[in-house]
Amino acid sequence: AQSVSQHNHHVILSEAASLELGCNYSYGGTVNLFWYVQYPGQHLQLLLKYFSGDPLVKGIKGFEAEFIKSKFSFNLRKPSVQWSDTAEYFCAVPDTGRRALTFGSGTRLQVQP
Amino acid sequence: NAGVTQTPKFRVLKTGQSMTLLCAQDMNHEYMYWYRQDPGMGLRLIHYSVGEGTTAKGEVPDGYNVSRLKKQNFLLGLESAAPSQTSVYFCASSYTPGNEQFFGPGTRLTVL
Image 1: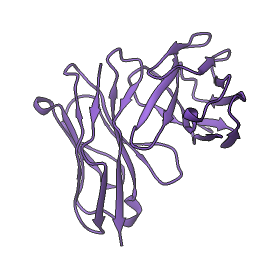
Image 2: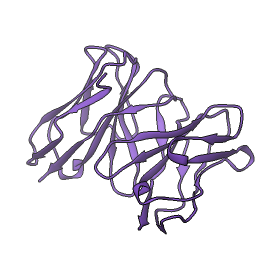
Image 3: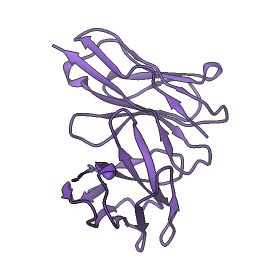
Image 4: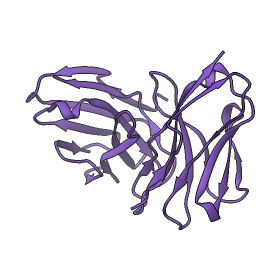
């Protein structure tokens, strides 16, 4: 079965610091890749997605992610974080049967002003 | 468009009580999902539906039932609530499977 690993469970950064959150998936076939963000007390919102083409994907609010097929990775990056980026971030890929999405366990990002 | 809506937003149950969570979407999506979110475990799929009148089990279906009588609605039922079902429940919908999902605001359920 498909699995998604997010290695960082809790990240604390100061404003203006750079961010990189790791995401690795297990199934090696053609995949769609997603990053979702959940702000405190809110529902999940799509941050960015990769289906095909340029492996460097740009999303909302200055976030980007790079798909590296050989490493089964889809890491999320932002050059300079803001206090408003404090949230939980989830990586997701379609499950093995492509019925739904399999989510990673999430990374809680805390940005200190 | 309201997107995906869920009712209720909060609920407290006693062990053994039953309840139904309602999810509605106005995007004409065929696929609908129920997830539960627990700390450190991400989102886990409970049940899903690929269209009106169809339902299927996900990763953690035990203790839950679902129905999709209308395309826009997906109901999640707990027949006899247990403390282990204390969680935040999210409904989602998508146009195609394995594609972007749109989430509702969630229901926070506490079972005492």
